[in-house]
Every structure is written in structure tokens, then in C-alpha cells.
Image (cartoon, rainbow, N blue to C red; front, side):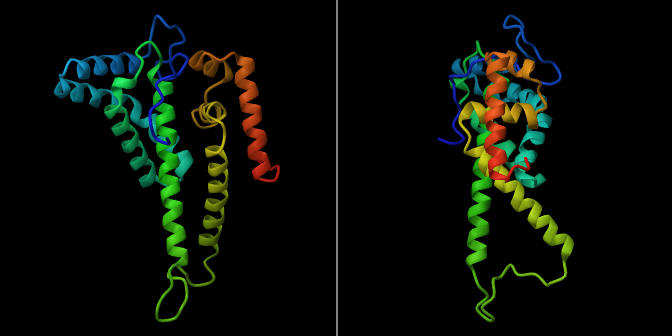
Length: 220
């Protein structure tokens, strides 16, 4: 289900700026997540919430950047990030402490962003089919001549095409695309973070880009 954490992830850490590719030296985010999980399991949820605040502070800037790349709207990105953090805390017992928190969180975040994008699409479709009872025109109609507004709308529509195509990618292709193009990771870093070989990372990335180019008519 979109937005639900996936506890069966491979790999090492992705956290910026303290990224670790050594399983014996987990990232600060992974250390905090393991601590929070232990506190929740021990029944100390108040302390867990306090420590979770530190985890949010550590991850929030990167999370907002990734979410904004999907949603192209600061308010929607902030809400998607908050949704992701809520899901993380509610499902922290599903986090495997021997695996990197960063990749686990990225998948939850991407799903939260895609869920919000779908909700926005439903809302826009509802608006577009609503009509002004007085003149029978769509209520969202704006005066002609707003060229800059039209360009923004076209750019947004095109980006939403890309985002829908990304959402339709197989899980690993979507994750690799996100880490490479939205989180600016190198294939070597993605390999270390996910446990895939660099060759496998490049194959997933190639396939993801090929599908996106198909959606965009070869202009991706």
C-alpha cells in the first residue's frame, strides 16, 4: 500500500552530510532510529518522542528538498514530509535496526509525496468538472492574456506527467531514480546505500530513464 513502510530494505546509509558506507558505522539517522525503536518497544514513548524530534531535525531539510522535487509546491512538500514523519513514528517498530534508516525513510517519503500528488490530482479534476451555476463556465477559468500563468500551468502539467511516470516505475527503479536525480547520489553511493552492485544500479537507472523518455517523447 502506498505510504506504508517497507521493513525489508537492503543497503547502507544515505544521510547527508554524514554518510556512511560501512555497516559497522551506521549513519546518525540510523543510530537515532534504532534508539527510538528501542524506547518505543520498552514502553517509554515520551522519551521516544523527544528523541524523534532530533531525528526530524536531522532529516527534514533533505526530506523537504526531495518532496518539493515531486510536488513543485512548498506547502504540499512540507505536508508530505510531515505525513512521512508521522508514518515513521507510528511504524518505527517495523524498522530493522541492522539496515539503514535513510533508505527506509526515503521510500516512505516518496510514497507520501505521491499520495499527496494523487490527492491534488483528484481535487483538480473535481474543480475542472465543477461549473459556475450562473454562466455555466468552469469555476477555475481565468481571464485571457495571462501568458506567464499559462506557461506555469503547462510546466506543472508536464512535471506531473513525469511524476506519474515515476510513480508507475517498479520499486527499485523508482528508488534509484529518486536517489540519483532528486537526492543527487552517485551510482557508487547508491550501491553502498542499497546493497545493489553498481552495475545493477546503472541498469535500474537506465530502465527508469528510458521509461520516462517514452512518456516525454524522448525529451527527458
